Image (cartoon, rainbow, N blue to C red; front, side, top):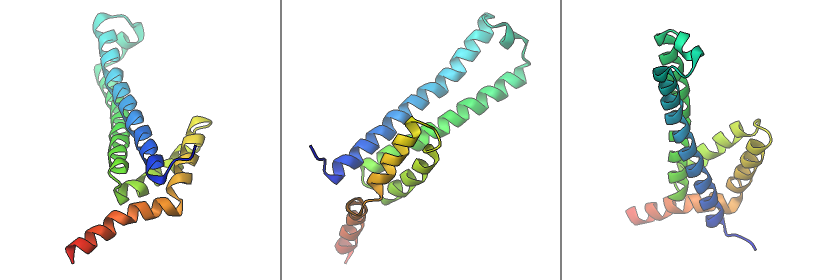
Length: 136
């Protein structure tokens, strides 16, 4: 069974949306679990940490996860809507996925393979050419 180009792009968009949702849950969990453990005294290590260190560490972890989640959610939406900027950004993030063996390598390689094909490039150029024709 062969998929058309738009279906392949939609699969990549769904991947980004699912990954964005997962990282959003992780960002929220990082804060909730650590603060709960600190408040209940369940963790001796967290209880001994100074408040500024715990808050700074949580902010850094949750912020990083939250930014990656927001990026993936934006990319997923942009790819779903066939936005040219999303194709470019997805290719850039795919390059950064490749060193994370084995899943990142497979995902990044597959994303690059699909988005660098001529049919995909034409799909993303088509909305722009239609808009230019409508403006004339």
